[in-house]
Image 1: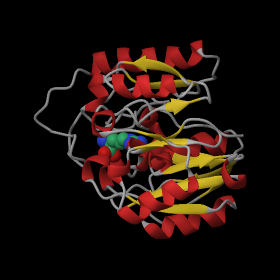
Image 2 (image 1 turned 45 degrees about the vertical axis):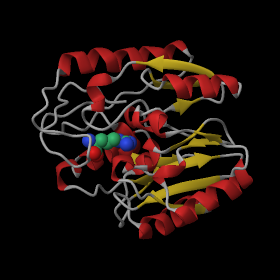
Image 3 (image 1 turned 120 degrees about the vertical axis):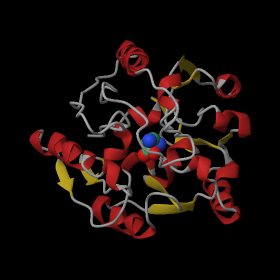
Image 4 (image 1 turned 90 degrees about the vertical axis):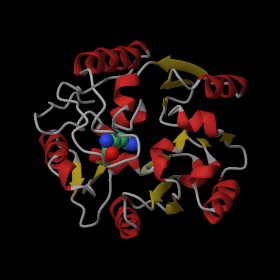
Length: 261
Ligand code: ARG
């Protein structure tokens, strides 16, 4: 995770961002801190990346890389404004001895990649359409040695895979079908017949932008309906308020890069 100390909306690269909106960076830090404490309280380790002035979106740590079984496939941001973040993420992994593979193709890390270790023997889901480009899916498959299933995102409000779909345990997902092309919806239905399905309100409340340890599902507090759906499906929803960061177009999952040894 990376503190939103320098968080601001200085440019607009997704439909949620409005440069005329005032941002309270102090409140953002407070809310982010509650998220960090929530993860610690659930027994997880949290490592911190040092925030840098001039990189207002650095709090969205999920975009910096995608890690599977100790191998790190690095990010290459679509927008120039965020390009330098990749350098900080790379240094984080390299100084700690992770096997880092530098990308040639445009991709925004866990923003557009999800991993399900027990689905079909270990499956990567990958989004394209707005940020990550299709050739990166093939590059990730070669880097990580796992089958990568390409899914096309069609609604600009859901510009990253991680605002439309999330893994809720090692083999299942929750997703909002409306974010995907009709063909990609069929692919998801075939791969995940038991998926939890989210609706428009869940998606617009950033409910899909969640992290789960297989039981506890940490999600945006505005996504009350999705919390109920997940509870009915046997999960334990843990709501966290992240209203300030929503102004940048992100929530829980965007703030967390998962380290999979
Ligand atoms: N303002 C950031 C951007 O548009 C938000 C990134 C959200 N991150 C995510 N994993 N969805 O790039």
